[in-house]
Length: 293
Image 1 (cartoon, rainbow, N blue to C red):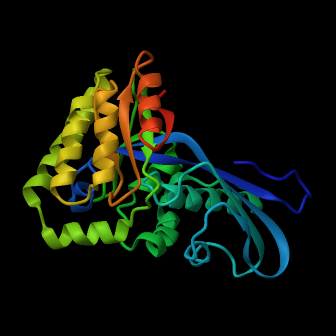
Image 2: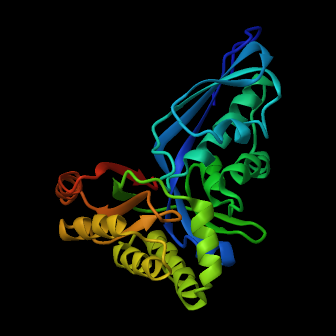
């Protein structure tokens, strides 16, 4: 977060990272723990004083719900908002959570202070509920902490995880946005309790392997198969995972609520280039990210 120099009327800037859910999506809504990680892609929010009603001056995010979401935390008068983001929108990488946390940090800068985690977590729910209906809170918790987190909704329980070995991933963006609220509602209607219980168990094993510095790739693949079984994957997400596995990834899964969005594969220094090339050749936008470390 950047603060203005003394006496300057702004601009005020806040920055926050996106995230990937490594394991446990959907099960986390039902009380199981999930593993999520901040990524190097960021959203930057700049606030400037302007006369009249507050509103968006410029935005990299094209979504009519953005202003109603930000209006839950911004004053109704006197501020213009500019949004710049590296994150794909609506694709399971926490773009809305990063937007919420970056905005809260910019607001705090305007007030000449820093904003702590508790405030970010509590107030971050306000815009997230506009955009996602009934979010678990994991996205903006991870964005606020900027690390790998073991998260349970009840409490909430938020445990930062230190990875002895950073995890390198290739992300495949399907180019089709998902609808988190619709996916969560669909799972609730189908109520696949056995699969959700297993997803929760897989997340615990992923956490343990990460903390031991072991490759969790096979568990990620199992997690994806379970997500496919509960009806939140798509043929395009399945294809992205298959392409990455065939090219040398040790595991692959969709990330986020499903119905579209991104998938990722676990790679090493010797396999990353081949996996990235295969993803691109298959028609996906591909890029590498590091989590942990």
